[in-house]
Length: 194
Image (cartoon, rainbow, N blue to C red; front, top):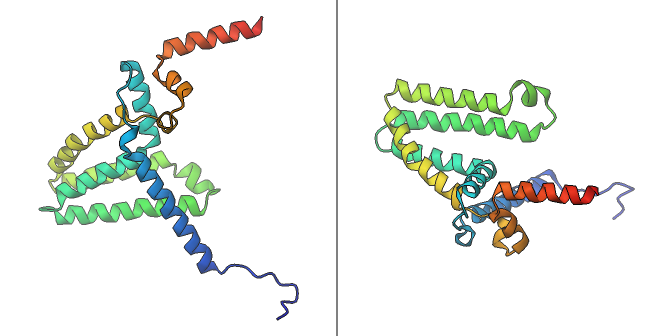
């Protein structure tokens, strides 16, 4: 059958299905990276623990927020159904904002005026006010008392993925304190400039 110069393309549904399958695979990979038992080790000292914690909190921030959110919902589930439903509705609004950011990546309105930090701050304020109005602050405090130590433990003991793979050079860099790294960089710069 002749197509008279027209190009056959994948249908929109097939493209959307492939995109959903790819996101599901990437989500499974991210979850396996988040909780892989081989990826945990004690840091060399307090400075290395602090650096590792900051780096992991920045990298796994969505995972940590999800853990805290699930803990909050689970503390509200038995007795505070209205608060739980409000939190679920608020999470749908936040999810819709995230979808809009992906769908319209070059939007000045979404990127500059409605900055992510502003939306996050408004989101947290609305949730805290709602929990205060329904006398459920104790549930928030309980969820934070359970979740924050778990998040901090994970952030401190989680090793970078390239260290798990066995890269000894990266292991030496991760284990060395920052002051030694700075001295080494200064020595490298001085030797290179001569």
